[in-house]
Image (cartoon, rainbow, N blue to C red; front, side, top):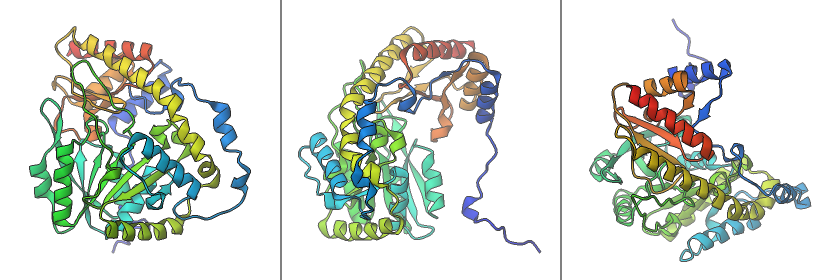
Length: 400
């Protein structure tokens, strides 16, 4: 007779390195210089921060007094409300419907606990960020995918989305703009989402961490896109935080902004406050510093946008001189999706790039792209490394 494992089944993950991770570790051990086209940490890639102002903000003597506020200190929440008033002037954000968290990962955990019983489902758009699978499984929630389809730009497959709604569905999850495809949810799509949520009594979860980074390319002029913080037609939870807004991932400040029908919002916030009170996880120094840390976006965002736009232009110029690799349309964020010949698996090509060309890219299957033939590259990489990395990538693809 076998004994039950001492560990919970929800943590029974495959912990062995996959082939790509092994190849990356092998390259690191070789000592060769790597051209990293997967850059995601802005603090490591040469952007200028106002170090003195940031560090001084963390020295506020008020942080020495313990003032447990489940939703976050009023002054901190008010600074987030002011941020939204600046980026979305038509949306008056009541700080009372904001809940501060230690990043968006904790925010997802709070929302899964708020909305779902064990075994309930959340519908999630794919391609998408792979962390969602772990966040959901830890909370005993099942993710059911619906797909974004590509036809001169990315769109929600509403036929698949509607057919995926079942008795256990509790919410629809989107990233706006999506990571890594970079598409925003369009106004007509938002209207259909609201109608679906109302008809099936679902919540809408919208991750807007990349919202401040719209892109303009030579081949597409993106229209203005609205934040979901002003959405009132369905119960809506908008997630964001310092990680991308001020390019300060180490500060671990995120939030949930609740919106929608007044009665539902009031009940949701009251329940979230109890969940947050159970953890009281966000520390005092960053809460007191939050107004200053949010203000840092005004100096760091232009630097990031300038680099991302410059790399995007360089990428398009290099792609124009060959025919094997193309770029899919992108409207926002830090990443570009490349379409490559599907003569081998995406992982196989990514490993060959590591082993033979010392270039790191993400294979499309990391993000659940349907089928082979997709690579994801970061536009955050410094320009000289980015250009050389793309040159080697194109040469590798040309070799077949």
